[in-house]
Image (cartoon, rainbow over all chains, first blue to last red; front, side):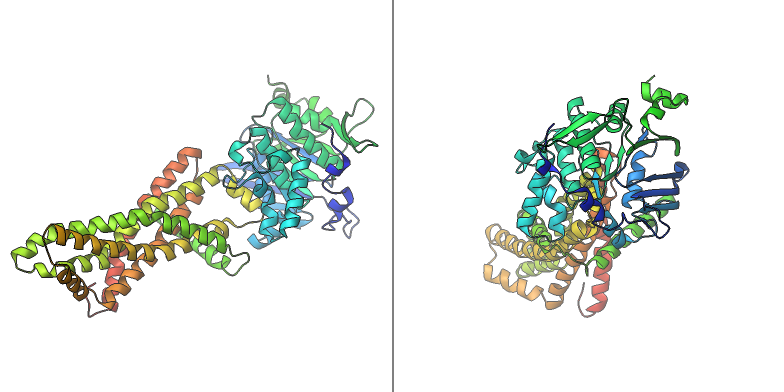
Length: 296
Length: 256
């Protein structure tokens, strides 16, 4: 997939400096985009998360792996404040969101783009209105909204679908519209909740390429929840570059390079059982991880 | 015990939903266009079934009451009986039950589908409060539309009664109209408007609460829709009793 430089939704410096949160804190430590400190959550007697600690640095993609029901999507819901943790701290741009009320959470949510598993497009709204939703709610001028919507749909290569209704779109198109909607307002953090589930391999690859472009060209911090190992392969071994003509290319890290802006964590029974690079993941001795990667 | 705790939990949930709606009233944006859209869907959309219900209810009241009244030589009071029954009780209650079936189920199914397809989560993630965007406009539209629909049902009920009295029993229309006038006073009209306001609120809150608390995929949508209609209908009938008693005390001279 080759795109011109104009496709980029904002410069890396714009994305980071928009909220000023990339500045080092008083102790000289760069504030992570997202940080979990000892987060615990249980529904009745069932423990979902048990003392989760991890952080997502600026411009980093954190791949969250785990079987069904392991709490992967719960992590995303906690970051958005859709559910509350029982204990621990969740910091978004250095602000603890666990004690925030709805009004404060709305402010935090404006910094975050969320891509849902099935797209979660509003059935009654056209593609245009879905992508424009956030700006319409904020009362932005209609001319500016149209410009922004067309730019986002160009980024996900779906300009032709602008007038369609969600029911007319394929699964892959719905996810891409969902990504375009999530990127409106240039969020510095994007959360992907199993965005490739149920898609054919080429379409899944396209979704991963969009995530790589966001990471490498927009400096967006992201969490990518998945249980598909080919997603891990794409995200942790390929990077996006722009050539002299402004076209985007995806290259493999090969043997000489090692991507430092992508790491994976694996959840099991509410705990993180692995955290590190994809190479470490592949060589992990844990039999569960071994089985998870190879499927046997 | 389980039934009581479930009831209390649901009451708590609906109260919290109401409180969030009230708190959201002073915040921007206010979604006036949503209220207008819902008024069209709820009010205009329900007009047909409400008119039919009112017309045939008025007709059947005359059909059943006229022979008895004739036996006692009081057939000239037939309009009074229809007017009193319709405006005080049958108009508000039957309209509310029809709207609970048509609109309550639609609201619950729509919100339930939005929950299971994560559209509600998406709305919250995009910085919009589902209570302000979805619940408040629907409840306000119901509170505004139901009294108007009730008035329509009352008018067409009286009209239906008149048609039956004239066509089947040959009652003079002037006698029927003067009898209707004699049977209705201002307290009846006020009571007949207050009730549907409360019923609209009950239907709206229950339907929205059930829809937003849908669990378990498409099967859950069906369950919450059924529960919404049943709970709204039962609560309308229970509320009607207590409202009648309350209004009876308020207008102590009249017979609510």
